[in-house]
Image (tube, rainbow, N blue to C red; front, top):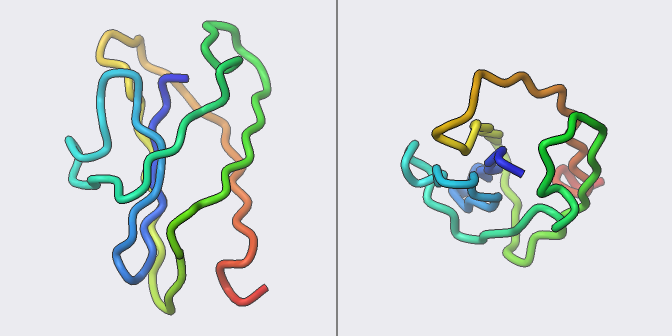
Length: 93
């Protein structure tokens, strides 16, 4: 997958996935924890893709959380994403 993203906790811990050839630090979000998209996402096909990530670093804190998403491929045509992110357990749930 070309999409990069990061989740930033109120305490400043940053976890996410780098883009294909654009990384999150290039837009001001160096990752403390780097994860990967599933291998079967390496496709040019439009479709519905699902991934479940389990952070190893503790992500917690009261305050503002940030979710940053980027098209991580410099040679890409303009692209649209239709995304659903579900975060479990971040607010004492």
